[in-house]
Length: 255
Image (cartoon, rainbow, N blue to C red; front, side, top):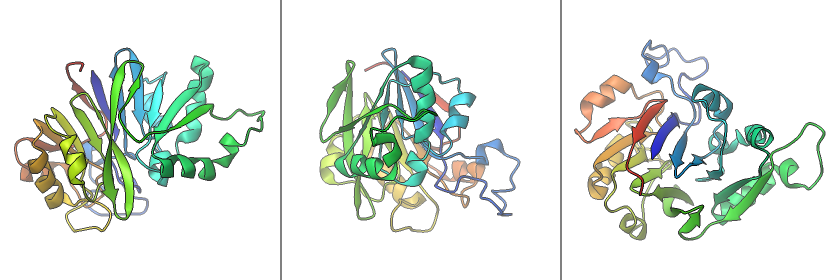
């Protein structure tokens, strides 16, 4: 089972346009972050979590030429606005791509990208996607996918658990019922936006506290803004927690 963090930035990306702060002008490549998405290869299938704004660049960087499914956490722009790039995978592989999300996310995708789902043919082509509402664990081509309900301010969005890996981005709280689904993790990928508190995202201290409650073997913090310097945060975190960087890879046993 291969896991690649394609992007680990908050919605602006890092560096931010026009910003001259120490992180945005850093020469450390681990401080250059594209928008959040995750790639999983398991059982011969390629699964993408969120079609980030930077999907085309991420796919080229990691030679991703096929996607068998896309899991959506929620419908905010930075997690969905790469959706049009999915059509290239349709062309190359001559297949419709199944996409999954909760009801609110699927409803918003149909509204926000109405040109894709209006049933009108386009000479330039448009993504061929099959939208599926998920409310509970489901099987995809022999792979068990467990949606994890989490809070994103007043939204209830989804994280996902596949095997002993869980991906929880844009998280500001985890209900007790969802915590039960996160026991025994080898790898937890959890958002940690910045040091100051934020109404819709865990800050670093909150993410550390939640990680200690979940107690995975390893936690990786993602969805980080330009207030976070990679090396500084790495030096401050407990031994079983590290910051993400774009292109970070993990090899785990298949579930």
